[in-house]
Length: 126
Image (cartoon, rainbow, N blue to C red; front, side, top):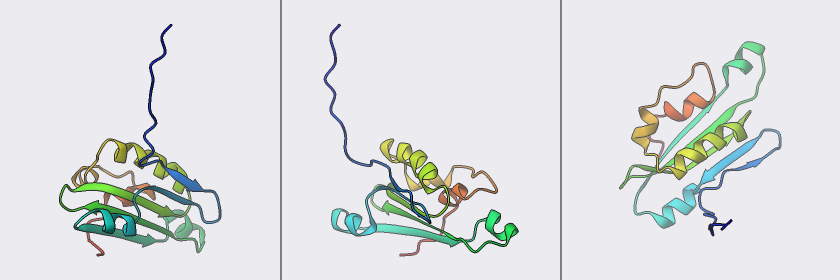
């Protein structure tokens, strides 16, 4: 049996920190994207998830999308909050596949879920 030689692509590796609140990230940070691309768009969301609202909790979730405006490609996804690792794992596939902001915008979100926020961010923060 001949084994194929494969190289690992170390770009866009989803990463999580299992702390309280949980942190998940994939792709470039806003600062890295600014140094690599001529122009980027940043979309953010900060909210209290429905589970916290109905249960009287105080936990919040913060999310950020970083987009290369020239290609519309999403180059970074970041999240602080409950289930961040699970959500970012799925977004890692999207980044590896070269998903654009238009792809995110065309995706129907699962309501009510925190993850839907990544596909409903429409207003550019900066």
